[in-house]
Image (cartoon, rainbow, N blue to C red; front, side):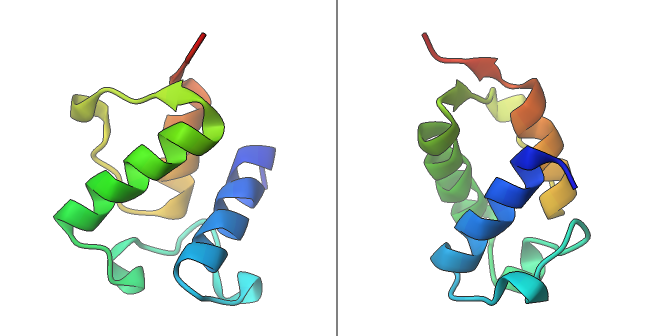
Length: 78
């Protein structure tokens, strides 16, 4: 797994009170109980943590692997 995915899994485990070994690249946001508003809130939290900006039109993700890939391609904040 990528460093971004590992960091993301740690953050998601803490935020959603899950065990790290319960989460993986194919874990869906839906399985974590994240609805459309929750997805936006999560993206904002991740932008702050990773110091990146993700355009709204790019935020169409369903799995943790897709979120990690999005973070890897996001523009850093100066």
